[in-house]
Amino acid sequence: MHSGTQERRRKFYGWGYEGDEVSPQEIAEFEKAWTRLLGVSDFTAVPFPREDSINLRPCRVKVPASLEASCTTDKYDRLYHTYGASSVDVAYSVRGEFRNPPDAVAYPRTEDDIVKLFRWCEDDSLAAIPYGGGTSVVGGVNPPEHDRYRGALSIDMKYFNKVLEIDHASQAARIQTGVLGPHLEQQLKPSGLTLRFFLQAWEFSSLGGWIATRAAGHFATVYTQIDDHIESMKVVSPAGNIESRRFPVSGSGPNPDRLFLGSEGALGIITEAWVRLHRRPKHRQMTTARFTDYDKAVEATRCISQSGLYPANARLVEREEAAYASSSDGTYDILVLGFESADHPVDAWMKRALEICGDFGGTWDEASLSGGADADSGALA
Image 1 (cartoon, rainbow, N blue to C red):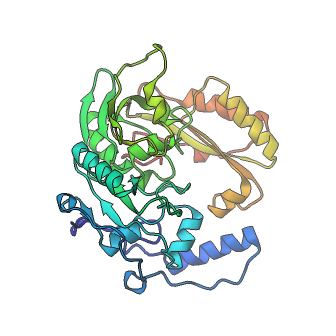
Image 2: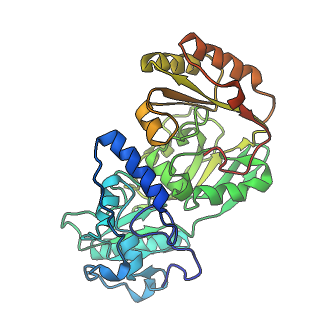
Image 3: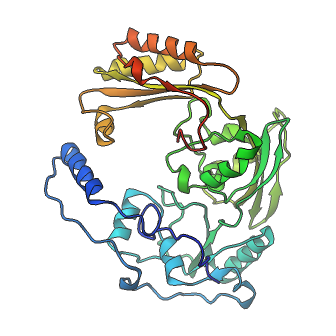
C-alpha cells in the first residue's frame, strides 16, 4: 500500500513540501540573523539528504496479509515518520541520521482498521505510535529507543480528514481528527463558521494533534486553548472504544475528555470530536506597539489582558526574536495587537488598548492600523 502517488509529498527531512527549497536570498537572511543572535559568522551550507543516499535499518516485522491494504514498509514512508519537528529532530534528519525508523506505517480509513492495528501490535509486541501532522517537538511521534518492543508501527491519521456534521444553531461541528488546519478551515468556510484556532504549526498539524497535546493558538488570546473548544470526542483505545456525551456545558462530575486532552496519544487514538466554532469576523483592527523597556511592555500586556477588552491577539515579542523575524532592528520589543468581531466595529477597543500602551511608553504608527473585511482562512495565522 502506498500513501498516494498523486499527492504532493512532504519533505522527510524538514518542514514543507518537496520542491519548495530555501532560496539563496533567504539563506543569506538566516545567516545574517544568526550572526546577530549567536555571534557566529562562518557558515557552511550542508546539502539536504536524498532518499537514495540513506541506508535504512531493515524492517523487523512482517505485516499480516489482512493488514497489507492499510500498511506500508516503503522507504519514504518510514523516513518521513521517523522524526517530529523539534530542532534536534530536524538536525538529525538534515544530517541523514535515521537510526531508529518505524518498521511499518499504517494509514487506517476506519475505526475498525485502528482496532485491527492495535490487535496486531498487542500480538506481536509492537509500539503503536499515533501520527497526526508530525509537528511534535517533544518526541511524541518518534519510535521508542528502548528494546521493550520488537518493532514500531506509526499510525498515520491522514484519511480521517472530514468535517462530518455542522450544527449551525449551536455553532459546533463534528470533525475527524486527522484533518490539517488549512483543510479544516476550507471545509468550514461555506458555513460562515470557523474554528479560529491558529497556532504556529497550523499548516501541517491536525485537530487530533491539537487535542492530544492541549495546544494553544498562536493568534489566540480569546480563543487560546483547544480545551475550550471541545464538547465531546471519540477515542479508539487498546481496551475498547470510548465516546463521550456532547453537552454545551456540564458540571456533572469528572469530564472524561480530560483523560485524553494532553495525553499525547498514550491512552488511545482520538478519531472524532465535536468542537465549538465561531462566526467569521467581519470587523478587524491590527497594529504593533513598540517598547524600549521590556518590563513596561510586560505591564502593558498584563493590563490589556485584564482590561476586559478581550483582544483577539496580544502577543509580546522580545526584541531579539523580533529582530530574527525582521520585525525589529533589535532596539525595541513589539506587542502585536489585534481585535476582531463578527458583530460590531472594534475601533473603540483598539483605541483604548493603545491608550494603555501609551501609559507604559509604547509608541505606534497610526498609519499602520489595518482592518477591513474578513480575509480567507489563515490570513491571521
